Length: 252
Image (cartoon, rainbow, N blue to C red):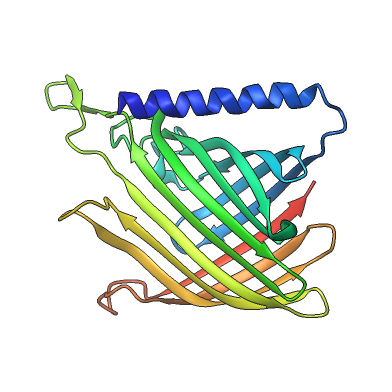
């Protein structure tokens, strides 16, 4: 885990170094997008994505996710799970397809699994790929949330020990759709979250599948609603068997 942490720190330092170099070239293009998300599992979580062009085919990227679900932190608004990271976005197929590998850190207690929030508790390698043509759109995301620190738990006698276990997650989704001649597009979405994805320990948090409809403007603002079924095997009387997600996004 120490090697993983050092690798992640080195990659982030390299990314910030590229940003400092990019600041010396004022003609470089800077973009930022803010999205407000709410779904059946994660609750409400704003995301912020920024990019700085390095060449015609590559951008330096940054992202952050402000998780607000109390159970992901220490509750009561304190220690909320906070994620940030950096990466590079590569444009292929004349810019119609982009591939963006990133490396992020989580801060909180969801992965470290202790009683209190911990800075740099987890590492998140991920890749996002987007497709956008005149008629078609699509996105693929794959991220692995790996705990790199152990949280502290308080014993009956008052002493603190390392949490006996940590949490890891594999999260991925794929969606694809068709654009109309106007501002509307529609398609299908599949998403899967796996808890502790190791042999003999993994479990499905959910597997969502369903349609989506999106309204977007040429300036990069829009609204998308996705809803459907959770196809994970569950007991109908005690478990949620449907899902929904709403995203409003704004290009600044």
